[in-house]
Amino acid sequence: MAVSEAIPAVGAVDYGVPHVAVIMDGNGRWAKMRGWPRLVGHRRGAERVKQIVRACPDMGVSWLTVYAFSTENWKRSTEEVLGLMKIFARYIEKEADALSAEGVRMRFIGGRDRLDPKLQKLMAGIEARTAGNTRLNLTVAINYGGRDELARASARLARDLAAGVICEADLGEAALEARLDTAGIPDPDLVIRTSGESRTSNFMPWQAAYSEYEFTQTLWPDFGPEALAEVLARFGQRERRFGGAKA
Image (cartoon, rainbow, N blue to C red; front, side):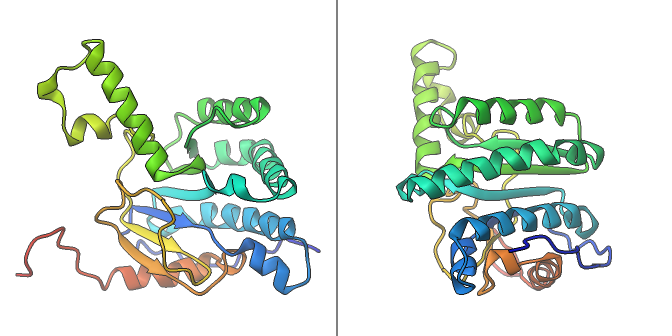
C-alpha cells in the first residue's frame, strides 16, 4: 500500500491566480476503489498536499487554503477521526523543517478547543516557527465550518461592542471580517473541489462570495500539480466583473 510517488515536473508558469482554496474530497472513495481502508486514502491525500504546496509558488500561487477537516466530519467513525488527527499531527511533525526551509508560512483556521491538546500545541508551534516566511502562505482548515466561523466572529463582535472596544457606528462588514479566522488573509480567487461533488460544504461562505469555482471529477489523491496547472490555465479564460457590467 505505498502512498508516495515522485512529484511530476511542471514548468514554472505564473497563471495569475494568487489565492487558491481547495476542498480536498475523495480520499475515502479512492481507497475503497482499490479495496483499501479509508485511512490509506487520507494518507495518500496528505502526500498530495505536500506536492501541491511545493508546486504552487512556481505557478504564481502565493496563498493556498486547504479544507482538511470540517465541523461535520466528527460524524465519521471514531477510527477514521482518530486516524485523521494522527495524520495531521504527523504531517506537522514531518514537514516542519521542509516548510521552514522552503519559505512556507503555515497557519490554521477553525475552532481548536475540540482538538487534542498535543495537536493544538503542534499547530501553535509551526505557526510561530513559520510566521516570518513569505514564499507561500498555507492555511489549513481543521474543525472548520463557515457557519461556525461566522457565529464565533459575531460573538467576538458582540463582546467587543459590550466592552466598549467598538461603538455601534463601527459595526459593518469590515468589523466582522476583522474577527473572522481569516483576518489578514485575502479572499480566494479560485475554489477547487475534487471528486465530482458540486457543493461548497460550508467552506468559506464569506470569503468566497466572489470566488470562481471549479468542480473536477478527479479524486483528491489523483489531483497532482499537472491537474492544478490545467485548472489554473482555465481560470485565465474567465472574466471576473465582481457585480459590474461587461464593458
